[in-house]
Structure formats: structure tokens, C-alpha cells
Image (cartoon, rainbow, N blue to C red; front, side, top):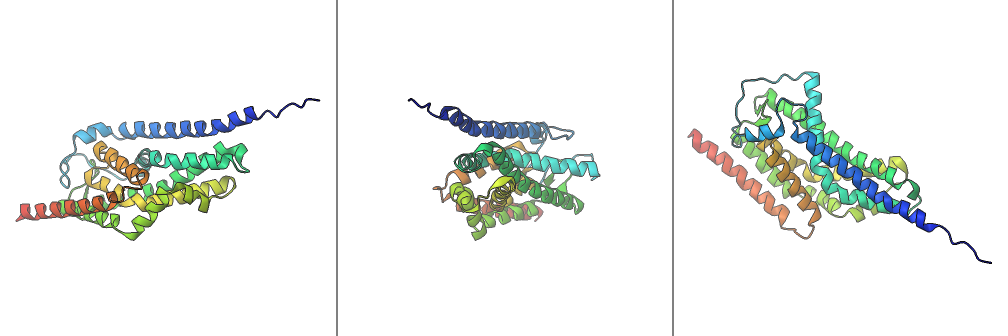
Length: 278
């Protein structure tokens, strides 16, 4: 008597589709965030316009219009930061999200691997939402004390801009930066240590991964205040650099070199400002 073999082919095809579905979702999120960022995120000017109008570091173009921090404007600035962080950070997080999907496919959560991966991604993005709220408060504070130009959203003091560059450079050389970067560079090890079952577990794991990435990259994101929060050259440049940091673990020279360059650039900017005043 012949027995009918189990129809594993259908199951295998469904499981293989999980990674494709997650990858499509990630791509849609990245493209949508990029488009919204370039479109200006509800501002009066697009990011392309603000990039064209950008002045030298520490000396942005002055505009006659003023900014009033109404509740609506505050929400708009928060969305600007969050969407921009999504566009900048999601590409470098995509390998970890796909690895998480593959991990769930071979465990007891195989039937809901796609959904859990989206929970993981949501947790990751929420972590950057917290940073965006802090960055919004920081932008408001800088404008309040006159260190940032409201319409251009850029530091207007060469000395302060130099200090931010030096601070970012010093953080690049810190042990906390190195510790967080190790987690970001080793997604397999991170997931082996922190993976948890169920939707809440997936969200928690994603948020924790986002927290490590935040600890790794927050100082670099502050450089947007130096070059212009909506300056596409700085946005794209920082995003590419962050990806290189995470995806090239053997390039151990990259981080300290960047730290040294930032420190020297900050000192050069401060010295130039002092010379101009003298």
C-alpha cells in the first residue's frame, strides 16, 4: 500500500515568502520615509530647497520669517525628525530584521514569523521615535537661547558648532560607543541573547536593538544641527556612514578615524571663528 508523502512543498513556499514579505515592507517604509523627507515633511520648503539655501557651517543663511512653536508646529518637527530617522536608520537595520524573520521561521512561531518581524521593526522604530522627541526638545531649546536659526534649523554659532563636532568626535572614541556598536555589528549574537517569544517579545527585542543603535549613533545624528537638519548632503552622508560602521565590522579603523576627523574639524572651526573675531 502506497502512502501519500506530506505536502511540505506548500509549507516551504509559505515560509520562504516570509522573508520576501518582510523585505517588501521594509523597502516600502524606507522609500516612503525618503520621499516624505525630500518633500519637506509638511514644511514651506522642500529638503532640496533648504539644501540649496544652506550656508557655511555655523553661519546659515538668515531668513526674515520667524518660527512660532505652536502645538501643531511641534508635532510637525517631531514627525520631521522621526521620518528622517526612519529613512536613515532602517536600511542598516534591514539585515537584522531579515535574520529575525529567519530565526522565527524555524521555531515555534513559524506560522506568524512575518507578523512578529513587523512587531520587531515597530519596536526598533519606536526607539528612534524617543530620540526624535528628545531632538525636537533640543531644537526648541537651541532656538529659545538663540543658538539655532529657526527657519533653516541650523546652529548659527561657529564656536558652538565646533563644540558639537568635538563632542561627537570624542563619543566616537568612547567605550560606550564601542559597546553599542558591537551589538549592532553582531545581529546573530544579539538575537541569540535577547530573542523572546510572542508579539510583546518581538517588540521588546526590536526596541532593545533600537536602543543599542541609538547608543551607537545618537552623537552622529546631532551633526544634523551643524550641517542643517534638512540638508540632504548631511542626511545622506550620515546615513551612508552609519551603514558602513555597522556592515563593515572588519574596518576597525573607521570609527577612531572619524572621531579624530570630527575633533580636528571642530578645533579648526573654533580657531577660524576666533581668528575672524580677532
